[in-house]
Image (cartoon, rainbow, N blue to C red; front, side, top):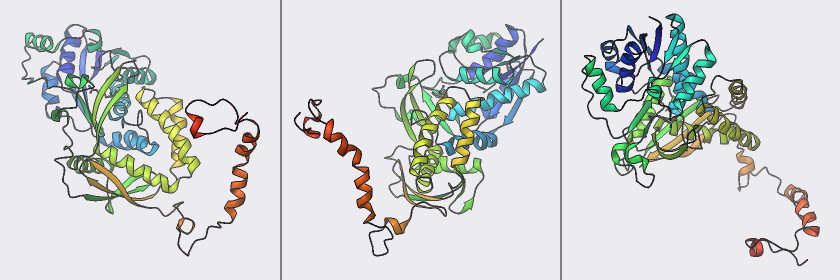
Length: 412
Ligand code: ARG
């Protein structure tokens, strides 16, 4: 039988897929479980996969690579989709696509499969990633090709002698990894409905979070976080620590109406305490170490980068170009940021950087002032030249209603 590598979470969809791909499609299925952190099915993947008829279950701990080569570069770039979503799910997909292809080569498989539906972004990220890395691989998407309702899936497995206590469906569709958790569907589909407490799992509500603040000092080197409170920390340990601490203080809840690549608007509840804190601190450090123009262009690039990550174009020349630009911008983004965590809020309270562009001598109002105030006069004279010239000839006559008071022109 031809061999196929399935991205296997251990959940009902992909467990059903193992059986379906074997019985209906005639594949030898190798179930590949990629651990990017936080999966509740992790302890049972092996036994479930084998029970469902996989010829082999392989588990790869990809957390380190995920944080180091996917989450942290997105952090350094400031990539937040629609200024909001730290891209946890979106960043994990290209890594999974790459590992599927790698394992397909190792196992001499001719096909790969994933459990994505036909309505979301994830199918695009998997498919585009896989076909870019190896166009010769067949791609199968059982859930997209042959969607089965939950009860049908459970029945189907039972008919094949696989009786697993699946428990309650749960009120939401969840995807989680170490960079963040997402919940959608159920009552969340009504955008007028406030998310119920059960929508959140990583974070306390602001009311339940401690009223006493916690202070946190994060140091960055070339745009990457390296230590907390002066203690060097490995990437995975750092993100776990901040998820835990931030979660206890209620930091990192995001309620977002998001535009999917396939044209659907969807309501997403994210929890991403570590990503929220790290992005906020990183931005504060860039404010100290980048020029106004660098900050302005980098924001445009960050939007573009988030867009390409979200839209499944990780393996692209566009990405290579952006990565080169981002790396260049981070040369001097080294320093420390202090934050206060309290009742759902993370607030930057102090910052320092050896190569800071903040010059106290220039900024100060006290006697140590090094700024030449008299030079401002000539500067303003030139700066105001364009509007003075324009006022002489153009700022006359009919004005939009809203400007009648706000910008009184002279009579024509
Ligand atoms: N909307 C997010 C994205 O496209 C998260 C999707 C996660 N899937 C889920 N079943 N909750 O990246």
